[in-house]
Length: 129
Image (cartoon, rainbow, N blue to C red; front, side, top):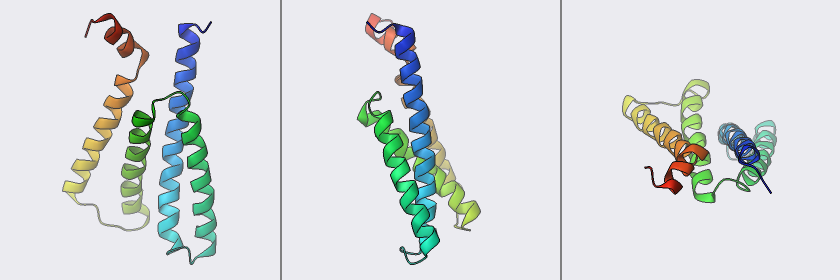
């Protein structure tokens, strides 16, 4: 029988893997941009490695986290990270309006994490919320 503490630890580990998957997704997106449609060998190799890492980490996380929540968080981290780092590292434009909507995505990701927390689930199941 699994205790609540063991479930929280496993769930926390899944969220760490999901954050790693998001970081790898950022690396993948930036590497694809640097590969210039896979015509630059070093960037193409980096893109392939990041692609495999993000898929592995995401698949591990989705063993515990619901696919809808996990995928939304992963895509949000990748989108925001690629836009932010693309602006800094690849000199891509980032307007104030784009930054605002990226902040909305970040807010959504945070709320998805909070809604998936064990404490929220306990309140939800007990009818307190």
